[in-house]
Image (cartoon, rainbow, N blue to C red; front, side, top):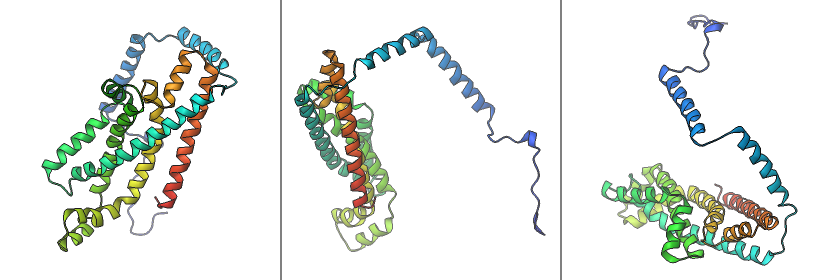
Length: 271
């Protein structure tokens, strides 16, 4: 019921109501994307018969993985411990390097001549997948856990550096101006004006990055950068698919453990 003095809104006929309004540019773009998808399917040699054969091969492959075998439990334990060490070290040094880079890249704290180089470093660290970076470090320092740690340090700088930089740019400047008014040096401004406002989000970023590094340590291990991924690749090479399943179960357990640990840390810091 329309209240007295209120102007009634025009009624739109039911047949003319459009829940989503789209222009001809949107429709043209959708048509081009659909046409390119059909073209890409033809170029990549996809076929229904190949898909059906793949399902059959996948079923036979999975049947060879059961039941899981822990006969090489010593290799599994060694790879698990090494993956944990790689993830923790990469997260620690990655966060340690990300903090000054993020502070230098914050445009509300630093001049342009300082922010652009810092942002360029973060962009370069985010440009490549950790596996590609791991291959580069393997060529530089050789096979082993050191290459994995260095690769994940680069990945950590790219992720934590960017998010922490954005968190600093969203803080209130009143607290910073109050610290500056006391004549405090720049380090004190950061310690008492910046960090108290972003410490909660920083803890959240760090716990997420540790969780991501636990997963990525498996990937970089496949190319020879240490960790449980090396044992996984070796098991595939030996056609020990039951041991492959045992490794996959262990990886899932490690990721779940990291998730529970990160949630516990977030509750402690009220993130």
